[in-house]
Amino acid sequence: MEHAIYLVTLVGTALVVAAAFSSLIAFRFGAPLLLLFLCIGLATGTDGLGIQFDNARIAYFAGSLALAVILFDSGFGTPLSALRQAAGPALSLATFGVLLTTGLFGAAAHYLLDLTWLESFLLGAAVASTDAAAVFFLLRAGEINLRERVRSTLEVESGTNDPIAIFLTITLVEIIAAHANPEANVLVTSLILGFVLNMGLGAVVGVLGGLAIVRLVDRLNLDHGLLPIFVLTLSLMVFAAAGAIGGSGFLAVYLAGLIAGNSDIRAVTILKRFQDGMSWLAQIIMFLILGLFATPSQFPAIMVPAVALGLFLMFVARPIAVWLCLIPFRLPRPEVAFVSWVGLRGAVSILLAITPLLGGLENGRVIFNTAFIIVLVSLVIQGWTVGPLARRLGLIVPARLGPLDKVELELPGSAHHELLAYRVAHGSPVARGERIPRWARPSLVLRDGRSMRFQDMGRLAAGDQVYIFVPDRYPRLLDKLFASRAVVDPEDADFFGAFAVDPARSAAELEAAYTPGLTEAEQKLTVGALVTARLGGHAEYADRVLLGPIELIVRDVDDKGKIMGLGLSFEPTAPVARVPVFLSAGEIGDRLSAFIRNWRKPAETQIAEARVDEKPAPEPAAEKATTES
Image 1 (cartoon, rainbow, N blue to C red):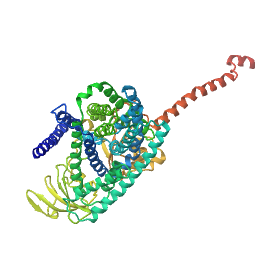
Image 2 (image 1 turned 90 degrees about the horizontal axis):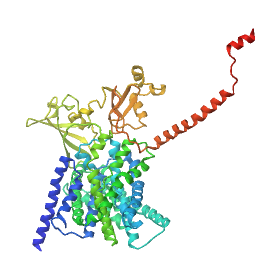
Image 3 (image 1 turned 60 degrees about the horizontal axis):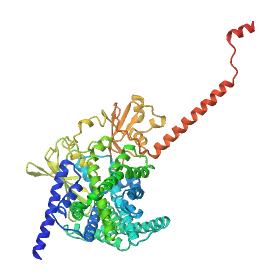
Image 4 (image 1 turned 90 degrees about the vertical axis):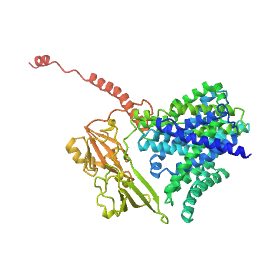
């Protein structure tokens, strides 16, 4: 018995270490990290090194706990600004998008696999949600600086679509296991009522749990080493409590993390670091277990239809669902195309595919193997094309900041202040003489191994280590002051225009200098207000507005979305790849209006020509002269 404990521990830790080392390969080559984790599990499983693991209940239990940890960390790290910016499109994708994907994919699965309609929709529900971990790792590993709106939409959708997919999957498994064959209207009614109850209870428990976590952390004077464990345990309690009363535990734990992360919770820096590490560990454990549970020798029997379904999901079901969900929002077609492509399937899909095995369904193993192959196809094809597609669609913008060396320290006994340690980077604004704002309190400077007061240092130099007391939730201005200049790709050298324009200047000056054709009302605005109005009331970093012969580019915005810097370019924007589909509601309306105008024009022209024919022809000049004489 003792020998077995040592052996199991050795094998388990060796797998985790191998997965951790594989992340270096993924960062180096931009490979999908989830794919590497799954491959390690497959290589050590039944058909690999021979480790036997066929316990579906343990796999589902461990995977569910790991997913709860990941969702809490995802909510904790989602700022409210991102939620406000992308709430509409993301929540539409997380609800109606999952339902549409399930329906479209289920219809295709029914004809490609020997499954009933309910089993086909069950498979569709299992693969309907996207994997946030895979998507955002690829964005970080490839150093892809996406537009904020696109990034926020993907982030919020990935964090909120899992509970809906989980509810659909579990409900369909219960219906099939009970050998029920309900009529379509009865099935839809029960799904709607169950969905409202499940999500409603999960939302209530999540909100109350998040508030309770914040209150307990502030009231209890726990040791800093115990505090992160305490918060993680409370989050799992929220997850379990919601599930115990029939609610969605996954939605509850995500909302609890969202509320706790956006409140003035104590020791937020320590909590973020701990949860980031726990989220990595949870991902590794979940992916390795799912890889061990699979049996690759069973894949060839369904390989062809499973690959075909994976391609159908990527090129048909997901794009149609995304387009229909985003029609009400005036998102550019390149952004809609990118969102539809970055719908990577991952561990959640494999985890949900275990539920048919738990329910004892006859075709449970077929559903699991099919979902596993679809995930592999998605990661191989979509995982390696995220970066190239973003560049092709013109969705990558230059980085705002260059390298930054910063350490955040919690102050004992202070709930609302932090101590930041910055190393002055070469070429940073403070190294060039920029002053530190008054709300920040520099206290100590280290230079060449000597410590001195900030007041005695004079001008800061590159390499100095500066310790600054700041209020928590400090503005991003300090990062901008201490970061080095961002290295701009040669292709982006002219991205922000030839020279800067003050957003507070009058737009009438632009009209006088370049005659872009502004209206009288627009000339009364400031340049910043003009750009914001042309952008529909919300400006984003790297937005561009064409005004006749010039183009204004948003160089910077503050935390409230106000334009702080503009660039002016005399060169038109390089055309991005044209997307022939994904028309928004506005574009559809414009095209319908143009069609109606063009349809009416020939009729009006015919009427005008008929009126001309009815008029008497004028007399020739020669005949008129003869008559008069």
